[in-house]
Length: 342
Image (cartoon, rainbow, N blue to C red; front, side, top):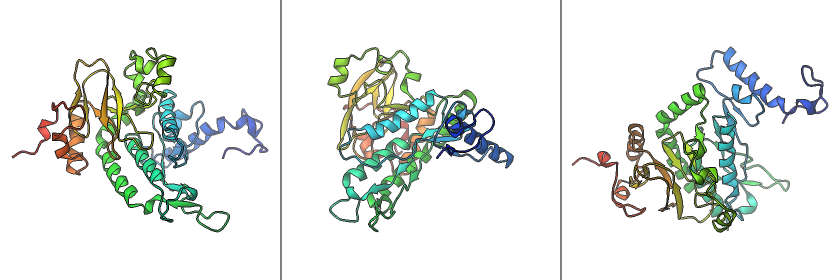
């Protein structure tokens, strides 16, 4: 995309090269003006894939574009780069950042079954959904799904035909919808205050050495393998507003992981267990993180209680598992009010 290099331009640019960067903000403004002129400014939005200077003033949602669905030989860099793009965009005023989940799997990664996607691609798509459900916009992207290659065959496989992926898509759609009321509050904050919906933890914990880097040494970074346990200046975790803390699983084969919990009381979403009390000043715990239950922690407040109640109604949260804790063994729970009355 972008302007032709050999085009004729007026205004501040006289060639395509000079106009290349500012094209992104001009394109965003054109779309915003069109929505306003149509009288749809309150219920319409658009998505842009590039930004420059004042793009944030005009843009609706910003998208990071297409990423390859591939956990093969991946150390977590693909999903982590998506997360970095979203939180870094938030620092730049791009408050509605997200990344669509690519459901097109390269055919060379196919499983031995021939037409089915391979297990690692399936796992990555599911982990991608887990992370994206806690961002501004939850959507999928066909990419080049099912397109023919140069030999006349299908160059990619489509994850829409995979039963596991479809079940997870249903699950995380419910989670995303259950956060609607809370997300609306965050969207209002983004509009009137400029706060990003998805936030780097440093915005809420500026003095925490785990996020500002002051407590990390080169030796520790090397020992921790880049901080995948939650200590790499927050690149492996993010906040949805100030009430939800997410540590997405970005690598293949993970069933449990160590996570760092910043200051204050936190409740493990899937078990209802209080894993950190009000006097917590920052600690590391180990939690189970099977597919479908990434490490997610919430504050004890009414709007989060409503969120949990919806998830239980939709059978997204297993009530039996909440009673039988799967984290540290602490039986304390702040969700007792949600237990079924006899």
